[in-house]
Length: 334
Ligand SMILES: CCCCCCCCCCCCCCCCCCCC(=O)SCCNC(=O)CCNC(=O)[C@H](O)C(C)(C)COP(=O)(O)OP(=O)(O)OC[C@H]1O[C@@H](n2cnc3c(N)ncnc32)[C@H](O)[C@@H]1OP(=O)(O)O
Ligand SMILES: Nc1ncnc2c1ncn2[C@@H]1O[C@H](COP(=O)(O)OP(=O)(O)OP(=O)(O)O)[C@@H](O)[C@H]1O
Ligand SMILES: O=C(O)CCC(=O)C(=O)O
Ligand SMILES: [Fe+2]
Ligand SMILES: [Mg+2]
Image 1 (cartoon, rainbow, N blue to C red):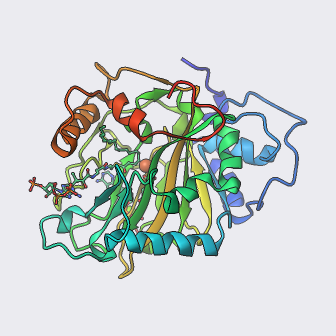
Image 2: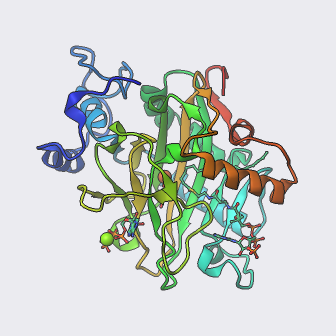
């Protein structure tokens, strides 16, 4: 068990005001060196990019927003590629095109209006380009170190809610899906492809929860239905302080895999778009999830692998070994 800083307990005094300051005045990039003073940082590595304030913020809160990191030109390109994927003009091995559960059984329309997310696009160069953007990778390195693998890729096209609240993503910890450790060497980069706020279902985070443990996840008991594998934290405490991340097109948030987060429903008529990649250090190692809280997701992945690909006798880690792709450095364990 790794030592956790005593200053990082969730809901600690003063966090929200520091947070507010951060969200209103995030430096565009690290103009100030962080080298002079290195307290017990464990969630970030020594680097020449993050300011001490940015490092401290991530250590305490488990996320960091960098404004305007991806150009509008690149985002518009990814949007066009996404549209071509929806029209089935482009495809790639392993890529999953998923419809919202509310329309899963309705007639198929080859249009972005039917698609809730495209997942596992690591073999589609036109989208994988996002994962290799140098300005993203240089931040990722501050969390993972130099040997960087992309492990999970998504372009999320949150649909206007059909009235059943299925466009919500329940509060969860991404580590629930990952059979590799250590958690601190894993990070997600999530980029808003347009302005995203509470009206179209922005990310909602519980600051500081990355210092806790991985919790039990199950399907939430939502009347209107839940999307496949959208597990939520079982004993989610609604009184913990939550922060809604309002982001502009190109803004990118980096967050820790134990941070509890989700997203609200899309109350607008537009399709809310974000693109993300989960990265891990290739020095991470696989674990056997048998006998842990992650057994239920392993079971679902095994069932899916059998149904979709006819693959028998796989473990959660086999699926991840097939998905992982080197972005920088050397592929070691993963
Ligand atoms: C070598 C082996 C490779 C194995 C690869 C497996 C790797 C999986 C790894 C784990 C993934 C999760 C990683 C997440 C990382 C953290 C990130 C944040 C958290 C998340 O985003 S969690 C959500 C992840 N969700 C998924 O991964 C689901 C992916 N989707 C799919 O697999 C398919 O789209 C789906 C849902 C199975 C549908 O299959 P499809 O063939 O596209 O559709 P059909 O029309 O044939 O329908 C089949 C069946 O499914 C029902 N269905 C359709 N859509 C949905 C839906 N959105 N929700 C629920 N159910 C759905 C449909 O009604 C059909 O039902 P039947 O009863 O008629 O059979
Ligand atoms: N019963 C619940 N169990 C688990 N998670 C929930 C539950 N209700 C809402 N959430 C989650 O809380 C987060 C916020 O959802 P919510 O729909 O309240 O959106 P919001 O952005 O807070 O909008 P508003 O407060 O304006 O209604 C989402 O991740 C959502 O999935
Ligand atoms: O974009 C969303 O709605 C949720 C994304 C998410 O949970 C993730 O990227 O891990
Ligand atoms: Fe997530
Ligand atoms: Mg709410």
